[in-house]
Image (spheres, rainbow, N blue to C red):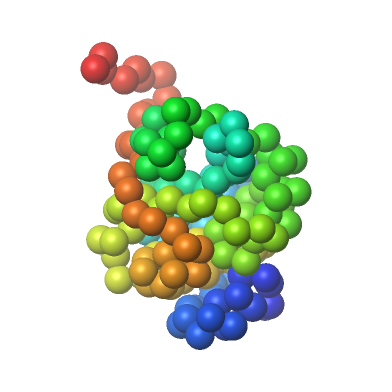
Length: 167
């Protein structure tokens, strides 16, 4: 399967593997679906999230087992604060659909921060540019392909109904 992501990785000469699975249209937890379908632990599958810095969009790449820490990604981007980008804005900017937004091969290069936990794996999985299509590559190759930097930008997802402890 060819997507802008696979074309970009090939053009850059970076090694990668592709993995496909049948996407269930009734599923909206795309990252967890990818983990379940591929049998890969959710800590190793990373979701691509777009944030709005007030001046531009930026990309945060975090494991599907966690959530994006907006304060941490703002600090990593050296801005005061960020908000999640609207899905339609993310789609227009990247050229991909929500649930299939790849951090690689986007229409416009955006500042990108990859969660530091990616470095704990030989390879990680990110969307290949379509729902049901994952790309496996080394974290340093992901950084090279996106111009990304590493920082701790995720936090553990809390079980439903629980509250975070006060700081």
